[in-house]
Image 1 (cartoon, rainbow, N blue to C red):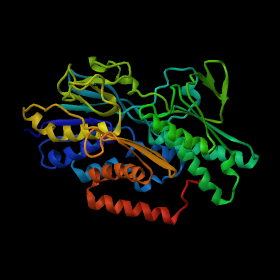
Image 2 (cartoon, rainbow, N blue to C red; image 1 turned 90 degrees about the vertical axis):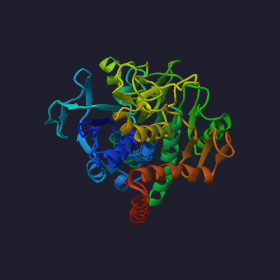
Image 3 (tube, rainbow, N blue to C red; image 1 turned 120 degrees about the vertical axis):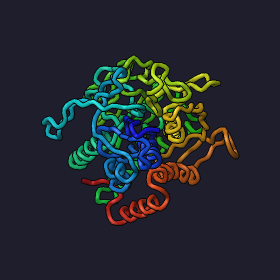
Length: 430
């Protein structure tokens, strides 16, 4: 394999960073290929914990990964940029202009050549182009968005305390993100009561809106019912079979014309890949902007272009539907491609990817957790809850840390995180 082989990975999420780390250690350090990771944000944060950043219950100091430093330690390079185009004939991606925080020009348009291109751009909530949603709602799809919501939350909490009136938060979307964010917000305000305002929890008026017949529709019915019951015991209102048609600064409007009033509106419904991927470079995409790939994660139109994780649509050979956009799918796809991409560059075929369903977990902050066991191992197809489910949920992140940093450094990071929690407040207050 020639050193001229250039592997470009776009997107530093769960799949992209894990793949870059593995290829950097195996191919980059050996000089067998040049591995480049492209992302518009300088740091990585495990996406399933974004709701804790939004609620202010997690300090990202010890959990975020700085791409530049991680790349230097693991045999690949990092390039800041936001992909906006693809030139397949020249084997180049196009990175758009970037601005400094003050709005001044920072970087001009650039082109990055590749021999193998991996698109791992993740997903975002789908507003279905409903009027007003993009203008007035907060999204929790990235670290900057989660931090922006937390800043707005702290401002509204201050206003509520000074005026002694309600803080109305409305979350559209009863999937895992919406449910976990609702529970985490309850924990935030419960902890805040210990910092001098015992009435703050009573001022939080949270409404969770789901268009389907139940929250957590991807989970078994008893998990959905138990989760909803727990949220309602916390004092939250859960509206199911409720369709939102538009939003403005007063709140969400239902299809029957009624207003669901809110001071902070969050959109956590639907899933789609970034809009610019739709039909990019002549590649086949579906209605959710996902790139349609074969079971080798290669596109049918160009074998040098791969897609994995939430931005890809892969239907197993014996499957009736595409794999779901979950962290588990992204992790397994990155591991599979990491094992075989080097051999593919030498002319060998990539074996078909086979997903092993480990189940799914949802955590209601410190209140409870639920999980479904996958089709493999003991007690397959069963349901877990309580402390074991909480532990299992926490272990997903620890496994992610081990993959990126190795066991020893991941253990040190865990210790630093625990010590950091002892020396400061348990929630973000300023």
